[in-house]
Amino acid sequence: MKKPLFGKNIVPSCTYCSYSKTEGNTQFCSAHKVLKNGKCRKFDYNPIMRVPRGAPKLPSFNNEDFSIKR
Image (tube, rainbow, N blue to C red):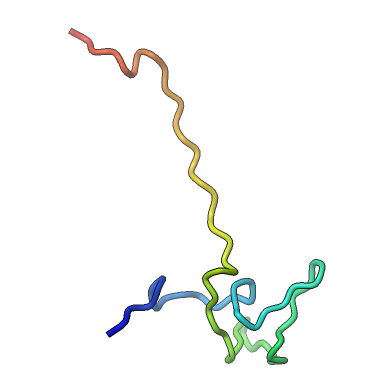
């Protein structure tokens, strides 16, 4: 049995749907479907279209953090 790439609990969003087309600041559905409750019945997840989150900010360290105290 093959497992889904990113799990089964992917919230549908037009930003990473295979049928989504972006022109300027507007998104269009190439399947010409109408959204009901913010969801499209034709939703097909495309992991390449998903924009990853930024890396978390690292904490700052000083020399005292790396010294051994006796």
